[in-house]
Image (tube, rainbow, N blue to C red):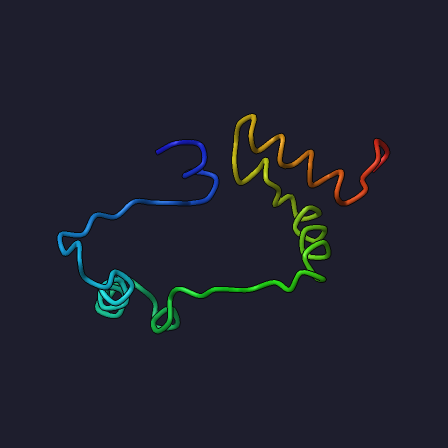
Length: 95
């Protein structure tokens, strides 16, 4: 585990069926795991596309929930991205 994995609650998995459809295998595992609550079965992986004209609004709302590049990517590069986002959002020293 590293800082990013901890911040993002990430994990690694290894599959012995390298050429198989991994999403299909994961769905099968999740559907057959009794430890997973009934309401978490079904489509487990989703993609959300944010339209370009709404990205700053999403970024601003995430910022106020303390979900920033710095919190997701601990280290100097995450800090740099958070500063860049702060400038994009027009934050000042008093914000």
